[in-house]
Image 1 (cartoon, helix red, strand yellow):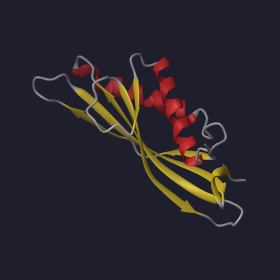
Image 2 (cartoon, rainbow, N blue to C red):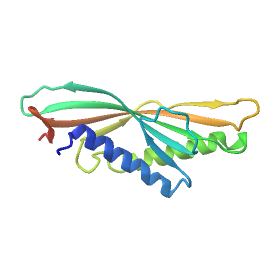
Image 3 (tube, rainbow, N blue to C red):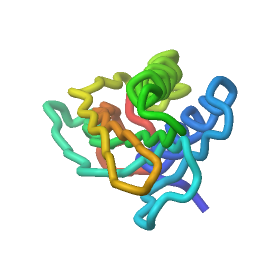
Image 4 (tube, one colour):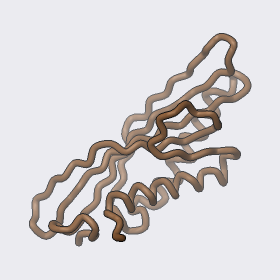
Length: 149
């Protein structure tokens, strides 16, 4: 069965994020995960809007919005910022090493990262960040399973 280009892009992005575990021990990567996380550190890839726009009949141009959330749960408050920033930097570095995701897209733009530190009495501290990404790609104007020119 053929796989749509948009799904190939999400799979490639997820595979890229999974390699972050080479530098961040114990990392778990999820896709569209909606339950409470139990493994830390974690990266969660969420799919968002897919915006079609075109100025040619030769190809269909899209912009896929995704969001990566990173969560760390160190044993001490002093590690919240450093651990969250380390996970963010490793994830962004890994993604930006190939902004074409193996030739599936032509650009990846990072949006504004937000970060929050959460303190709950009686629980270990945790921090999370949210990083929006905007992925631009082409398909055939008549077939979303075929990469455009």
